[in-house]
Each structure stands twice: as C-alpha cells, then as structure tokens.
Image (cartoon, rainbow, N blue to C red):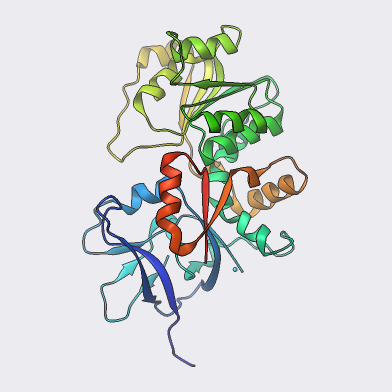
Length: 327
C-alpha cells in the first residue's frame, strides 16, 4: 500500500545485555532516504563486538544491533515510540527487515548455490573478513612468516585459515578452550598453546620454543586482554608486526615500552575489518570456500532468531564459535 511503512522484528537494546535490557520487539521502519535500500535479512552473524557496543550507555537513543548479515540485498524506527537507531558499523542486521546504505551492500548474485549457503555466508562481512583480511591485507603474511593468533573465536580461527591458505611457515593458535585448539589444528595451525596448561613455562617461552627461539613475525591479538597483548609484544621478533583487532572496552589501555619499539623495529598496528574492500574481498572468500580452501562451515552454528539469548550464551561459554541467527 502506497506510503505504508515497513514493519520488522528486531532485537532492541534498551541498555546492557547483562541487565536484561535486550528484547525482541516489533518496530516500524522510517521511510527510505536517497541512496538506501530496504532489505530482507536471511541470517545475521553474532559477534562479541555486538555485545560490547550494544551495552554502551548511549543516552536516550535505543539501539538495535548486529554487525553483519546476508540478505536477498541500521535503521531508525518510528511508531509513536522512542526512536530506535541502528548505528553499529553504520547499520544493524538483528532484524528481519532493515534499511541499509547502497554503499554497504555487496552483490552476492551468482555467488551462492542455495539458501543454506547464503545463511553460511552471513558472518563474512565482519568477523571472518576481519580475521582473514588482517593476515592477508594488513600483515601481508607469506610463506616465510611465523604467525601467532591470540584468541581462537571466529576472528582468530579465520586468521588461522588465512595463514594456512597463504602457506605461512609456522601458524600458532593460542586459547584456553581445548575444543577451539583442536579445531585450529584441523584447519591449519602447526602448533597450539593452551594458556591453562603452560606447565610452569611462560607464554613467551612456548611461542619461542615453537619458532626456533626467534618468536613471531606476525602477532594478531583478538582478545583485548592486556596481559596477553603485552606478552605478544614480547614474543614478537625484531621487525615483526603486532596487530590489535580485539578490545574489552573503550577505556582499555596498554603500556608500550617506547625504547624497545625504537631499537627493535617492531610495529604495533590496528586493523579495521581486516583492511578489506568488502565488494572485492567477500566474493574472494566465497570463492576460496567453494574451492575447499577456506572451510568457514566448521565455525558456524545456526539458531532461530528467537533463540538469540541461547546463541549469545553458547558463544560466551566457548561452545559455539560463530552463531548465526535465522530470520
């Protein structure tokens, strides 16, 4: 009907998740503006960063969440109720219909074989792109590199797969969840370290032992845990790169020894979305998946959208690496 606004179901944040302030609600979308598309969401990937940003104190504005999605193509809603804005990464996908900028859309036509594959590709635009892209685009790793990945969630395991794809000499995964360490070995890690089983050694010792005493040439930290970040700086060899892609909060600080960086030539870098151009990189990831070189299906577990609380719980507990919500 002309002039009628689209309606949607959305996971809306009225405050922090731990305070029980997230709810599934009916919302009414505002009219489209120039350069925007109305999109039906098939599946949404869930990320730890959704939890972090969705729990920030944003003032009177309400948020609906989600950092990545796949669609058969965030939003502000208005229905006489408080304004709801989807601001994370310029959009929000935790809804069955949403508004997106044309600039944020990747044309997936002819890239997927069926609906199940389309669901599988939901997280490509965030965590998987971030992990793989950081190793490929930011680190520009190669066959001679010794890559260490701190934290083996969706981002970290995607980095492991990318390092394997590039033929890196040493690929070391570090985590405290044994099932994730086993999966890392299955998809490409040459060594794994369980931080709960160091047997009197330090993490620095373990990494140097696995790298012939030299340390990592590329260290990627997905955890944002200061103690791990600082050890990562220490076990990275001279002229190596430490790339930070994880955070526990906006106020987290790390103390950098400036003289050490000056005399060692080490580089400390940040990375956003893996330094990727999504319109080019996502089709490349899909191609690698179809070739059997990038097995993202090993990371995924599907949940109905109304099971979002269970999906988040399993992600936090380490039972599920990358939950996908099906709308």
